[in-house]
Length: 329
Image (cartoon, rainbow, N blue to C red; front, side):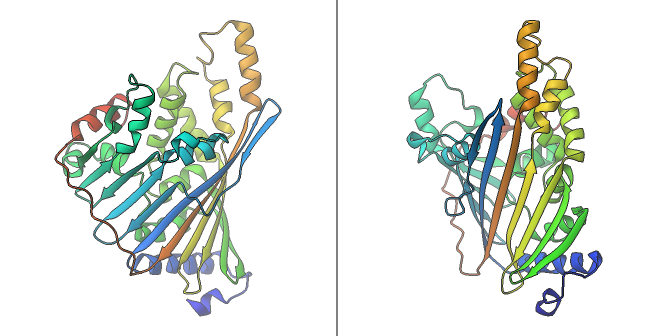
């Protein structure tokens, strides 16, 4: 590996892909690892710009993973603050945790009680405060699609990514040997699938979030899939001194989402024609970019905590929630 990474940047694409695949495969075999996810965005709306820098020291998601299980901490306050460029000091501790071992997922959402305290009528659905589990075996037996929608959002399996990520890149070159760095391009759809996600489910989730602007979520889902299949993404992969995966960077332009909304048949159906035209102009002008940094730390001494005990089963609640959103259909 060290010899391979010392080659110049003039290697063939096939050789470079081979080096990258080997590095990812070796990382997957390196026992326990920690994953930290940070991101920053740039919004440009009607001439105004909102930018949030990518804060490497304060990740939104931190996961510890071993062969037996994984534990993830998701900071919702930091996520929303990074996404919209706002300060959410009251939500500093708005963190939920998840454990997974292939048999079931255990969630601790007690921190979300602050949302209920602020608004007793808020409906958090299956994420209501508490400690509960989802039976993955029961979900998968009924619907593999639902299984993917529930369990497919954690960090990707590195052994699978070792094969899928290099294959997903439409271009790739090594740009540095210290640290070994690879730069490639792909599409949003190819990247999503390479990281273990389902692009149709991803598009359906986006459509569900944005269907207030267009009355047909199925139409939006189809249009979003088409957009993701052509949307360009830049990918940067850094290895550490051992030749193992260190950092995965992506830079993605999501402005097309708003073009799709503006072009959908039902856009602004509830508005007057004048209001609709004004909204069209705003949506067509929106620019939205997101840079993501996923840092990997391979260390056999990383300990993955056990999940808290719980007898509360929310499997059916999650099944119904996702089915209502069009997942698994």
